[in-house]
Structures are given as structure tokens and as C-alpha cells.
Length: 184
Ligand code: IMP
Ligand code: MG
Image 1 (cartoon, rainbow, N blue to C red):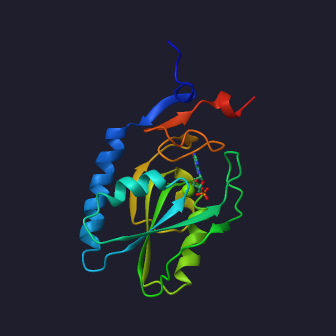
Image 2: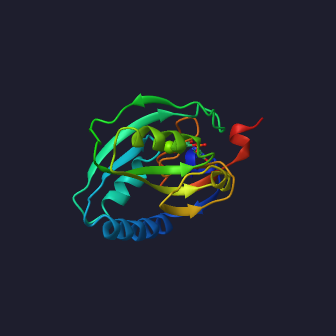
């Protein structure tokens, strides 16, 4: 039987579907309690946060709004360029609003640091972050991440929204990409 080529490129599964969904249920409960008086506008960062947003939002028991931003910090490689550019801006005016940024992963933290400053400068009442994954390097930048799903090792991961050269986003789990896929 022919093997599924996208699963073939996975070295190992880091977080399976059940682990991800259990964690999002927990985060959804915390967010529902913390924002009970001030339902937030969820700002998903395209494209990686699409799965997190879809599954997290359904676990928040509040009338939230959802909006999206697209920023570029990575090319097709595996290292942060440090250069952030807005590819798609918010549709909503966030003046006076409670904003919760929904992210897939914090690696160097450069993208998030920039995004926090950008959204705060628009006069939001509050801006907090919910990220499914965080790598150790993120601890070196001074950003306060209110909700973190999992702290993971410094490895390039794919799946559940995360890509390598725009592939593997549709894997239902988070896996470590085989080094042979991106190294000679
Ligand atoms: P940072 O600016 O280095 O924190 O990286 C932020 C963005 O880079 C994330 O939102 C992801 O889109 C992407 N990224 C960072 N690490 C990985 C990874 O291991 N796999 C896939 N994408 C990643
Ligand atoms: Mg991202």
C-alpha cells in the first residue's frame, strides 16, 4: 500500500490531536473566565494560526469577534528573518477593544514583539497573547505571553497550521520535520 507522502516527512509526532484539543479546552476555559466581563476580539495571525483559532474559538464560551492579520517574518526557510511586514491588516478598529492575539508558535519572538507594539499603538484597551507553542529562545525577548499551550524543544515543527515551504499545514498533529527534507 502506498504511504501518505506528507506523513513520510515527519520524523516523529510531538503532540497528537488529543493532546492539542485537551490543551485548547483548558485554554478556552481560562480565557472564558478571564474575559467574562470584556469579551475580546481574537486576532489570528495568518496562516499558521488558522487551526488554533478554529479550535480555540469553539472552546470560548463568550461572544468573541474574530479578525485576522497576515505578517511576514519567514521566507520559505526555517530561520526568522527579523523583518516584519504587514501583508493583510485587520478589518476592525481596535480602539478601546480588548485584543487577544492567537498565534501558532513563538520562536525568536520577533514577530510577536512587533505585533504587540503595533496593536498597542492603535489604542486597544488591552492586548494579550495566546500561543499554542513556544520554543526556548522566546524566553530571551521581553514579551509577556498570557496563555501558552506547550513549551517545545528547539526543533522545526510542522502540522496543525504550521508549514515548511507552505506544506504540511493540514497534518492534524504537530510533528518534527525530518532534517533530510530541508538539509542536503
Ligand atoms: P518568530 O518571529 O521567530 O517568533 O517566528 C514567528 C513565526 O515563524 C511563527 O508564527 C511561525 O509562523 C513561524 N515559525 C517559527 N518556528 C516555526 C516552526 O518550527 N515551524 C513552522 N513555522 C515556524
Ligand atoms: Mg505564525
